[in-house]
Length: 435
Image (cartoon, rainbow, N blue to C red; front, side):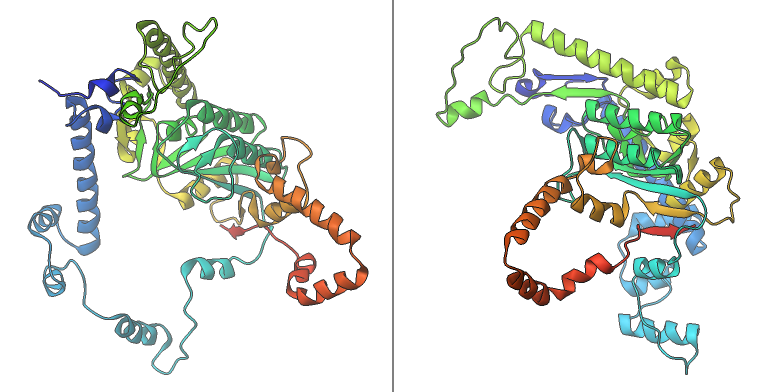
């Protein structure tokens, strides 16, 4: 089969193996046969899961759901007629119908709360039973420390320090690591995985809960957990490596931008240059590095999941799997979400299913404020990888300036910001939920 490729991009890409398709949209104008096969398999699997769930919830057969899916979309009345929904109502009409059913016609209308606020008020008692640390790892995986932006993704130094601080805390008996990531840096993923392994060596049970995606590096950081839970439709696997560099020499030339170079003993110094394609020797060097990473990835999967390396090779090659398929192939242990993962953690630490434990979002609010006011003493503390270090330095500067001001000015300032002074008198408790 002929497949047109962008040769200028193809020239600077190495991957292991054909199913590692992260950059296919830059390399090919259409699906490769390998990518088409796995995408069609996943679409079929997801549609099957969806049809089954709708059939069970709506009292229909899978065949009926598939037929309805093929004929849609539907108007509201048509959806009611086909039993896809129960009725039509505006927001106020829905409340008028539901509230009397719950509290009686003459009952007082209760305050309406978002579920998260309601849950935090219901679970307002802290420090009952063993502590399970809940750590979230979401977004692309990269090296370094996290800043203040919420969309920065997973940073290796920060996430490793958070896991390390939970592992060093005597009150923490288990860690639930919630992963929602399509991967990223091999090095960064390896650093985080090492901390998962070290946490287990310190006697902590580690349970992974996979979100929408836990693939490539997202699977890498999951592989050594004591137990891995995935949703049926989680996209996972992608055990493989891809490396590419963008060569923009043509673009620069069109813009009239030119480059020159001086080098010493630099036969391969330009291997990662953005204005030169790989030479044959440079490509061989990159291929050797990629092979080593791919081999390491497979070996760690085999070790973490206790699978023969031959089995791992069949499951690897960059192939992507649904969560249900991963459980069947033993890349994951069972189907479930965060709450089921917490249940598994309780089981692993020998706590009865109905016993109370404290699930604490790690590092939590109190530690965040502590980081703001106090710099880390060493790299074992979570504040080591926190951007709040710089704020701690800023706080010390502000404190020094304040100490130099006349007392009268300080008193005026304190009176004008009396609301802020209450922070010091308010006990801080980590975010926690009882389970």
